[in-house]
Length: 376
Image 1: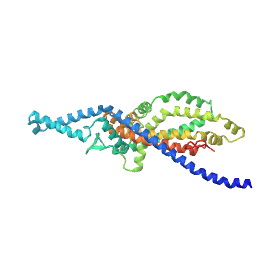
Image 2: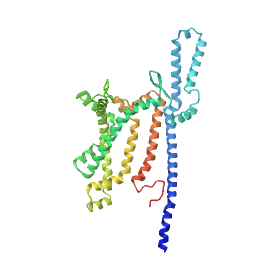
Image 3: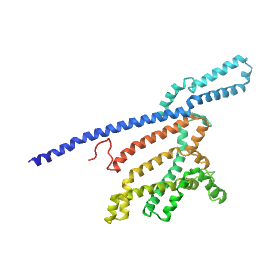
Image 4: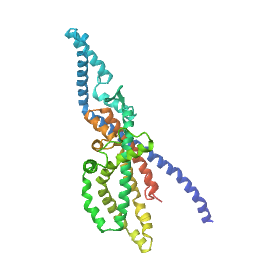
């Protein structure tokens, strides 16, 4: 009778635990989102301060405004006929109007918080330096125009690098001490050189010497009109950049993953599975890859996020029309809107990725709980 009462009361206890679990999950979600948003706000505001050099860039812009207006008035014959006092008054009035239009008539501290609000809402304004035929351009359009080229190049490179490094690392962990394993360990210091360093040598060998690959660019001039030919031409121009990026990271990536897999392959439960006669492929899939899945997912997610900013020097070397090259020119021209706009997009993507990774960890790894609850 007592056993029946205990069995009857057990579903009630299970149902009562469900609201507590959902409350804990909701509380964790809210707290985590608030913390990530505060982190994004701080990062974006620091970017605004650094990109503006604490207000020094505004002084440069004021000087440029004064110089441009003075030169424009000097080319006007009517203006030159005016008395000196009248000319100076008209110049100062025009400068005041232009500074008010750009918001330079307010203190930098006030404008920095206003600019922070616009940046967080993705109201990035216009770029006065990177102009088109019709004048200044919206920062949003500049980023969206160059972003696809960066995603195509670096996204393809990261996928190729990640898959190749994972496959080779698993192979080396099964053949520890082989000549190929020793070769990758010996060549791992070569990854200390950046991708553009290898790119220069690849351009010299395959473009200048062998003349079988293009020096740079994304597509031939004029570009093919057929979509299939256009895609093949883009792939042809991507060979050298993808090779350079892969060479710059493949050895250290394989070495790191190989060491990581070796550590997990020496665990007691793996040795027990080998003693039971479990197939080596099943051991890799169940006992090595599955425990390391959170780390693998994190590495892949962060590498994909890094794709969005591109590489300024690398894209300049290969004349690739991506976002990294735009950012490189923006830094040279003190173009604060473009610098902050790129940083805001990256900050939002990074915050969303970190938040999603917490959820993914709880899905792929039963040892992880969301919200700090105890694992049954």
